[in-house]
Amino acid sequence: MTKEEFNSKFKETLDTILLAMAENSEINPEKFYSMTCVLENLSFFSPILYGAIKNKKE
Image (cartoon, rainbow, N blue to C red; front, top):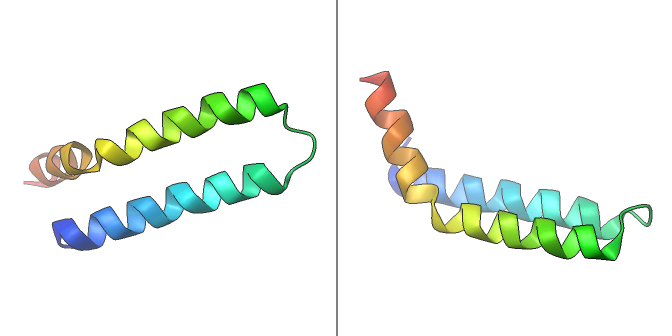
């Protein structure tokens, strides 16, 4: 898997999680916004995560 493929799939997964949370009426809006910030920060670190995973496999 290339770095670009990883970034794309990772972002897609985070977006899917966010959408599922947004559609769930049982989730407290304050917790939703906090989790949104966490997921957004994770998306910024996807290149680092990719590098860590790639180095671990090698």
